Image 1 (cartoon, rainbow, N blue to C red):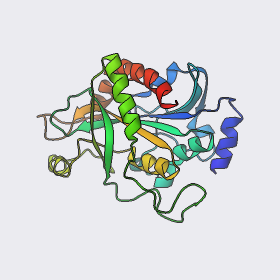
Image 2 (image 1 turned 90 degrees about the vertical axis):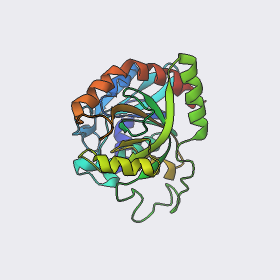
Image 3 (image 1 turned 120 degrees about the vertical axis):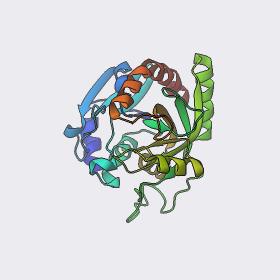
Image 4 (image 1 turned 135 degrees about the vertical axis):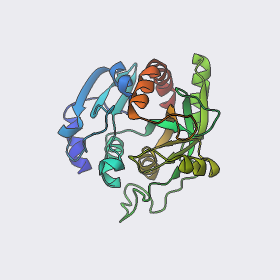
Length: 269
């Protein structure tokens, strides 16, 4: 099915992207920065799952950022929407097939580390998969990657170093930490957050990890950026809601756009 999607996309644009970006909840504004762009609704691409989550535009945007050809997934599919691991990672497989070799994954996340604040950006250094399954379960396609891919550097150290340098040049404060992936869609309980902190998680969300596993399987280099859209359950004396997540995404929109515009050309070098 990815071959059909590849032919469809290539039939709509002559741009050959080398860098791909996945935009999380409320973080879709960056796609509008591309010039000479082609926007394709996910529903038009063979095999591509629709985005049903609020705050996810549900379209592939292919265009140029200066001299760089970029593919942007404005929204993603989540397991909590009822999609399988194969469906949730389909977009990354397709992007690799059309030429993407470097991936930047963004997401909205809850802050577990007490040093974090709402609206902060965190570079993901590692992850903990608590979603109960893995996108590589089942027969392996040896043409895509090995049966047992190494995950000791799932998030490129070199890319994180570049991201830190770019952030410093722009005067943007970025943290670094471990991302825990939960199934959702319910937010975590205070007891679960205490557990996650105990096992070393700094932020928590419901996405990204399956995509990163698949990207590593295919030999792509990855960078992960979490936007702390809320403090996790039990940290503040208030309840959590998705409106707060979207509100914070809008609040940090300009900062994230400025960061990505300066960062992506450095990743393609």
